[in-house]
Amino acid sequence: MEGLRKVVFRIAKLMDVVGGVVLTFMMLITVLDVILRFIGKPITGTYELVFLGGAVVIGCAIPRTSWEGAHVCVDFAVGRFSATLQKTMAVFTRLCGMTFFFLLGWNLFALGTTLYNKEEVSLTLHVPIYPVAYILGVCAYVECLVLLALLILNWREVGHE
Image (cartoon, rainbow, N blue to C red):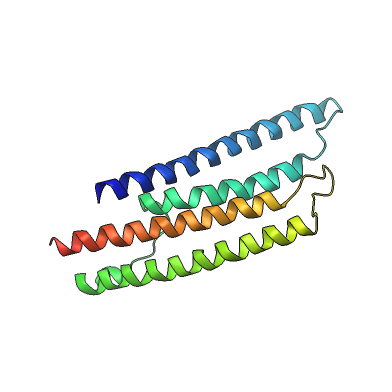
């Protein structure tokens, strides 16, 4: 099980690093655009690049956020349940999450294929949009892997209690 933990953590961390690099690029291009706009030479297409980059940043952040349990969790009601019911709820929510992210990934890959076939590009820079859909699809499948690993690891821990 330690091998599974390491592999999934490395993948989630890699996704987080990719998101961080894209976020840094977004910050730099925004700052440069503001400075250059001040002197009358704005960067064309900044909005498009930040828009597309924002989607990638959010998608890449989801797996590690789930792995570390850093997402917002409202458990004022679940916290009052018995330990067994809490574990059952955790299994149920992870299975629902896996189903959701699997279907999301499937549809994002289908969307990416449609965007590729129709040669959809951004309006100003004419940047192809389909890679963003594919990247988000990969992010959704990595999230499925993270949820599966958490489910297996928690199941093993419950078995040792």
